[in-house]
Image (cartoon, rainbow, N blue to C red):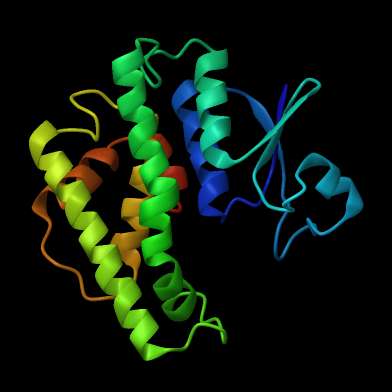
Length: 207
């Protein structure tokens, strides 16, 4: 059976948890990370030298990086609805997944660490303001894409791109920041909230 190593509160672990719910894929989970078992050990670093979660074990196969794990599981179980096999639609799904992991994540990181995690290393007001502005600008990019599709990130159908960006959208909606009105993003959030897996793992169990 698939083994998932990582604490449930982690946004990256929740990508995998939500995907498993969508796929009705059985797994066992071990809680690793801050507040749980420490990842800063030789045994864990042998699985992931970055000492970060999530990590999966699928038999003898070990994989880390949450987006790579999502791609692997969808491909391994033939879920072409979530990750198409045709080059162009697959590339669009992966494009938006990569955008989430690089551009969008880098935009919100300072603000999130300052205002949600209350990190003593993230207290510069100018840096918070710049990060918040960048976060909102990136969400406006998502708004434009959702206005084009009218449904999900890459079109009419739910894909892996919606798992990673759905979690990011929840984080933006819940952050204690001033947000522009983005009607397509809010409609998207409501659409995702109809999915039991998102309500459980994307919205932290809130209705």
